[in-house]
Length: 484
Image (cartoon, rainbow, N blue to C red; front, top):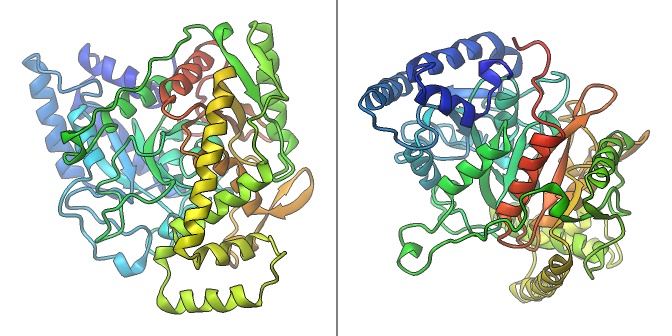
């Protein structure tokens, strides 16, 4: 078994319940590790030490009386900065929100506390959660524990980095453009993007916002697949208003063994080339699955034009985030749309058109989305899951120059737009599908690679079951060197 700081939340909770370690003792272990390792990572950017110590003491007293608060009793937890935690800042990395102190906990924070966690800090994000890096003018830059010259991903990059370095027990992030899946892949941990709508985002929003954004979800990150199951069960379900009318009942997985699954796999796509260093571990995984008698197809696809789906995702994604524009930015984008030729499908052109989309055009895009959603449902009658990359490459070097859409990454020796890999974000995001990322190996340079496990709408538990089986039989979380 790995060293205590790197154990899963499930294992940490078991150690607490069996009295092998106390809740206060476990919290202090992580606080000391933060003092030692966080300065070079800058993953954890806010702490509530006094509040956490008080809760850990109460957790120890409760356990002494035989009172277990929940499955994560006494597990120290940090959470993405964008979640409201009473008494702590919620800035989304925006200096204009530096003074914004949350008055109450986000609903998911309340539910995770009810599951027993000791919440003690917050982790870094990019400005407005809008990058596959995690840096901002308030808190600075977060580094990848495997190579501090590289990004840990974003926008839940601080979450993944803290988990990877053994600075926290479990985490939660958000995802509209792979912001859970991308950091999990870059850092070698587990992450789950839930089916849209099953986890209430109340308390995970900019000040004054209450409506759930299209495509956007919140969900857990962890060092183990079982942790994702436990955290999702804690977080999911209706809020107090919806609770009056509906209940969430996710279907149990139909299969208990790897060989029972019917798997489709994508290694690459013309819309987003995938680096060989990512494809090689994926092909090794598929070879393993074949040896386990898993039915695998590398040609099966839903009856969908993937280029059209990708463009539709960009359209709906950038429409979903368009409300953040100032009036001046909106007017500028309108002028840009007028000058762009109709046949310009560069990311920039698609972005500014979506930023100024009329409601009539949005309705047409949404109708097309739902037509594709039905085709995905047909596909999942024949296959349980689709495996594909989480991103086009392993973690890339820090690059803060210019605008995000102007930057490039290296894929198979060529410089390509970093925004190309939004294809791998949208493949599950645009039609509300769940996606789990599980680590499957390392590149020759020693960087983590994860596989994205996509299931049918509301098939979250099937994705998580498959990730857990892979964890047991194939590959599990590996701590990076240098964090003893």
